[in-house]
Length: 173
Image (cartoon, rainbow, N blue to C red; front, side, top):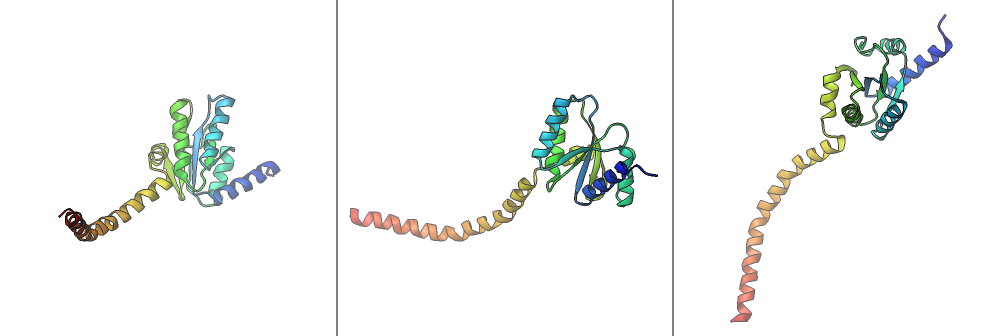
């Protein structure tokens, strides 16, 4: 007969996995309590949450929701970072913390229902933020329009300069 606490935890994990578009798995062995609190704060600022669950319960939840199998990274102590709307921000928070604290190991995770390994998480962390990507897209879209307006506006500007020069010469004469 399953433990009541484990059944409740499994239901909670499944609920969290339904609403998340990315989840990162880290090994937090060797971090002090203060460092873990700092990591949780950094993750929270990035719009994500960090929880520690039993690997077997996570495995069961992934199986029941038909999500990718992550058994290769679900070994040893694991903390799970559930990304919010911007998975890049939470991956960056983990990467920056791991850079400052060599003990933290990014094992991998899941994004958009697909397994990603540690190298892919690092690559995701090196992407610009969602806002940065939107700004780049808007710049790419608006640049040709701005250039077109400048080209179309050039003859009018030249005409206005000529009229201005003539107007300045007339009173002087």
